[in-house]
Image 1 (cartoon, rainbow, N blue to C red):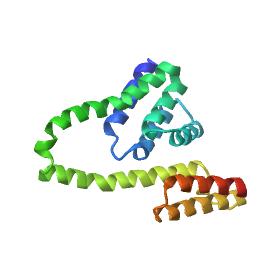
Image 2 (cartoon, one colour; image 1 turned 180 degrees about the vertical axis):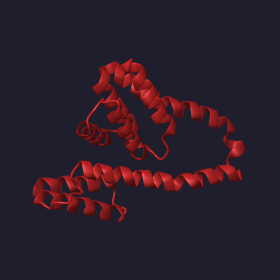
Image 3 (cartoon, rainbow, N blue to C red; image 1 turned 60 degrees about the horizontal axis):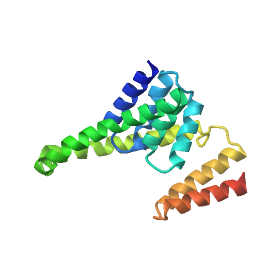
Length: 178
């Protein structure tokens, strides 16, 4: 039964995932917590690990959740379920894309998706920040340093500095300041 639940859950998440992995993290969190598969803290660790490993955070998260819930077979099922809707949609759309690419409905649809995707990414970042203590009401040395690194990273992203360097700078600052 757990395998069926993993498949259905991650198939649906894969079906409605627009905007990349970070945009669907709120949905992953809601589903994983509501099924009782993981706590918020455990999921936060999974998301941190998934974002550090090569590949899509959505696929990595589904794999790690599936593994945590049902071992290797659970990881395989959840990953397959997450990828399957995209694969099906790509096969169908690739046959139609030349016919609908410049149609006003298609253009309008994607224009309408942009603000939702941005809002989902911002929401996921704020939730992740709250869960990991970046946004705290009480001010301690650790929370101020964390907030400083967060703000510095955001500012550096707007300088077009390679994100790999920003990650390295943040890690070095963490070693020095913590």
